[in-house]
Image (tube, rainbow, N blue to C red; front, side, top):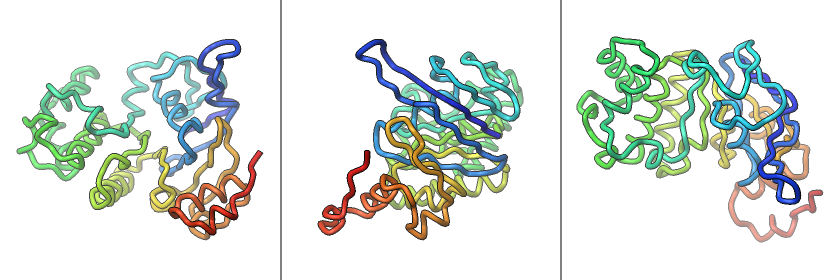
Amino acid sequence: MIDVTGLSVVFGQGAAAVHALRGIAFRVAEGESYGLVGESGSGKSTVLRVLSGLLMNWSGEVVIAGRPQVPRRSRAFHKLVQMVFQDPYGSLHPRHTVDRTLAEPVAIHRLGDVDRRIAVALTDVGLDLSFRFRYPHQLSGGQRQRVAIARALILEPRILLLDEPTSALDVSVQAEILNLLMRLRRERNLTFLLVSHNLAVVAHMCDRLSVMREGVIVEELTAATLRAQEPTHPYSRQLFRASTGYDRAAVDRLEAVA
């Protein structure tokens, strides 16, 4: 469903140039949930921005659902691929009701039957119709992220790009959203590409994952390997140790990674 080869992104020019991605490659099968993990600045979100069409200055090959992609995407592409952003407080327009937020993509794609589509989208994410005419400030963080997921799903895409979809939420709400996403993936046979700092979330949600560092994929793992704490690359091992919280003994065992 997603096939990326030699993907590179450079911001700036000359001595100030930043190589955000350096020729990365990975493949995601239809119906699979694939994770990208790594420290801040490793290039994870840049990958999603390229795949979604938000970032157009890139080189390499991107194939989505068997079709090679160019930087400027078609309307049909945006019906196929949708993105859920990290911050539900920032991704919803503060002066738009839930109704307007959900109706807008339906109008852009000229789908019709807007009332039914909005009702189905809200029901699918666990919200009743009483939420339809509320504003974002009248919703909790978890409810806002459910609306953001409903906005992505209302076009009935086949691929969801998830950029840290639970990191801005309380721990108890995170579990609800993750379970919701897993149910939706199962019911709709969705393909997920999930970016997260949280290795426990990735191990729970994903079948396979890639570990990124400084714009490069250093290792590809299965979720089983991650749960067994058996990564082979030194950076992957350090990332796992760091994810378990502060431990003085673990700090003493840190390896120098070139």
